[in-house]
Amino acid sequence: MFVILATFQLLGFDTSAPLTQDIADCLFNTGYRHAIFEAQFGTNYNIDAINNYNFAKVAGFKNIDFYIMPTQVLDPTEQINAVMKKLLDGNVIDNKTKIWLDAEDTQNYFGYHQENQNFINEMIQVLINILGADRVGIYTSLNSWSKLVDYSWRGVTSQKLWYVKKDGKQNFYDFASFGGWTRPFIKEYSSEQNLCGLQLNKDFESGK
Image 1 (cartoon, rainbow, N blue to C red):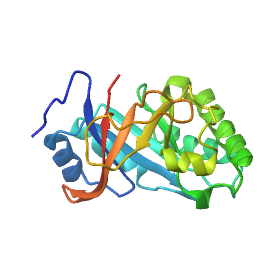
Image 2 (cartoon, rainbow, N blue to C red):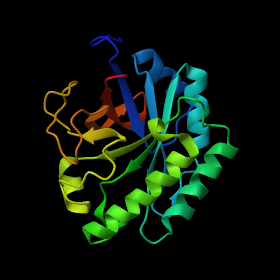
Image 3 (cartoon, rainbow, N blue to C red):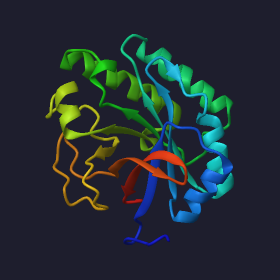
């Protein structure tokens, strides 16, 4: 059953796993309204990204985004252009689609703050050039941000924040400012859930 939590607030999910039409229909009928699919992890493009989008679209989802986990072994500009070309060629970038840059896995980043700051800045700028600033965001947590770029670095504060706090709570009351962000856009509040036959993470968002 879908419950409106508050004005302009939605429930969503994110996953790297392949959907079927039955799974997408089940998730929509369960009340989820925002789907976020993995497009890249490290050196690998997720071959299910385009099919996942299409299944979600048919099911009724109007908010469908993608996330990219980059890798430091590839050129930042080239890897973003490559994955975006696949998504654009697949006709899965509509006028609402956002792209989230995943900044959490230290194995896919450099060992020094300055290198990671430059790495993230370059990729974000490429995405902004393609989509516009309002459709590009960062996925991270306070702990991951501190390790990768330094807690206080404010280089991409103007981008939307999708933060991780797996406390099971569908609200932003736990949010503590970091990186210059004072208000999040999405919260990943639960992970590794099996719902409708799909392994997914659960998200709460303001919808604004």
